[in-house]
Image (cartoon, rainbow, N blue to C red; front, side, top):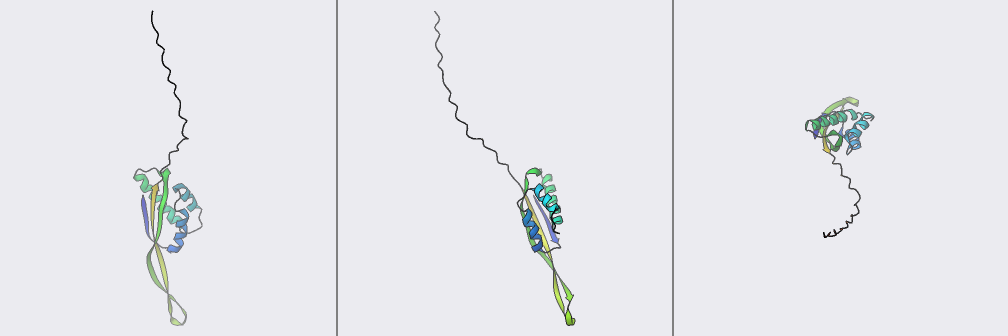
Length: 133
C-alpha cells in the first residue's frame, strides 16, 4: 500500500536520517520508534505511516503482517530567499522541501516445516486361511 507526502518543509538530508532508521521494520515497531525519536521529521513520517496503514485496511490487508518495504525521500522545490549582509549586499538562503513516498508490503509468514518423520514400517500380516470341516 502506498502513501505520499509532498512539499514537506524540511531538508531531505535531515529527513533521510529518520527514514533510514525505520526502513524495513514492522509497522508496530516503527510507530514505537517514531514516538520516542528526538527528530522533527519523526511526527510527519509517523502520520504518513498511519495513513498508509489506513489505506491498507481499506484494501483488506492484515495490518499485523505489514512492514515498510520502501521509504524514499526525494528533493522537493527549493524556495529562494535573500538575507541582508554587510555593506548593502545580500546572500541567498535556500529553503528546501522534501517529497516522501512510503510503500508497505505484507510479510508472508513462512510455514514451519517439521523435521522429516521417520517412515513407519508397516508389517503386512497374511491372514491364515481357516478351513471349515
